[in-house]
Image (cartoon, rainbow, N blue to C red; front, side, top):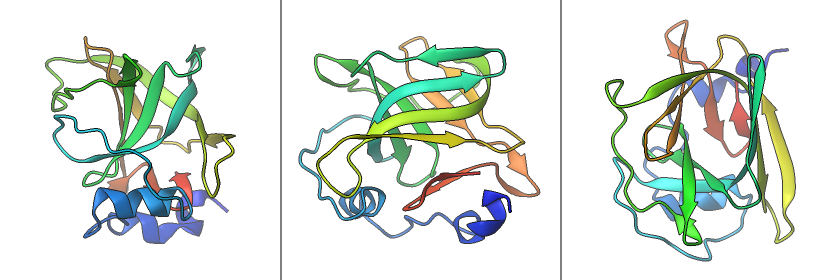
Length: 166
């Protein structure tokens, strides 16, 4: 059964609606509480899922060295951001997504990341996206935007306590 059907509740509305970023973090990390809050200038509050490991696109892989970039989800949009690490922290200014200032990299077939969900030990997680695939856009600052595409009036992927779905 496709994930979109098994986790259909994630596609009816943002599962983080009405929650503050600390509550969202705790849901995404299966009870773990935030250890540190970093203030950044972004179009919406961002919640860290973990550290990027790899993105698989059609015909190529983008590998991230340990600690090179953070994977975060928008608390309002429920879309994924890839944030370069600068001086051991995420980049401090995240511009609003605009097709005029980004480069389309391609469809993302798999997203891999490291996270400490449910404990303090880091584990490797991967998600194989379903068609239609989300699209990676890259800002000149190095910020990546993983944009969902329309799938029968709903986003092609969603993020919930179950992880990345769709």
